[in-house]
Image 1 (cartoon, helix red, strand yellow):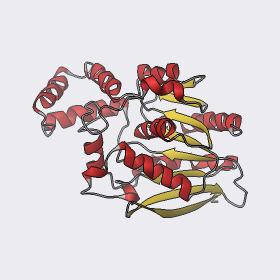
Image 2: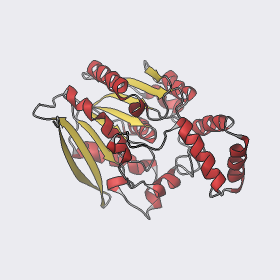
Image 3: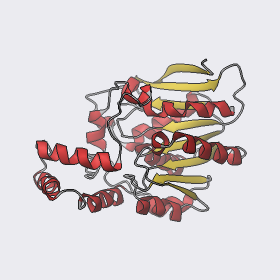
Length: 300
């Protein structure tokens, strides 16, 4: 029996529309501060966050959305839009449009970059806590760590990547194969028939926004976000902060520790064996962790 009620809608933004999805417990008041989820990419979608619908059973709305440029908020042929300011303004518009006065903010991968930028540059009121899941405070540190790990790939794969970076041409099938090996080790495997439907569901990825803002792959940040680095400003964060990462994550332990060390009184939870989507690879543990964390910080 369905235990949740789901509300979907759109908010106008920059002449386009931002899709959102709100999950609440069916027949019960959702009277606790909401959890607002910021997905990765840029250019991924909210889909994978649907594995966390069960968090609504704790009596709080669980809100996700598709950032402009992907999914149900798809926009193309607008490379001028794919800068952090666009997504920061969109997040402000969403918070205002949904009348969120008190909420927990969770950013995964690129979504964590957006969360950090939002907290540091826009100084929002009402953020009870921030959860930084498999994310980063520095694009160049991210690239550095991925290149360290490239050295563990087969020599043929390493050479293909080196050549591509020297020429700027990443179209060689050997590069694509090397990238796939790398992503299966540190990000995720292709979903199979036993995986949740939300992971298998076709989605409209924002390829233009990803390539324009980040680059051709995870280990070569060369887009508009290539100089993103808020490491020296992490001490300005006043919201309680929970850093989450996996031992085999694109967000390496060094990247996670850099955020943990820089944010005052932060907590860090390291998932043994997990890759880039800890919430997918161990959903029960992830939900239990967030349930405790949010209950402890609802009043902040």
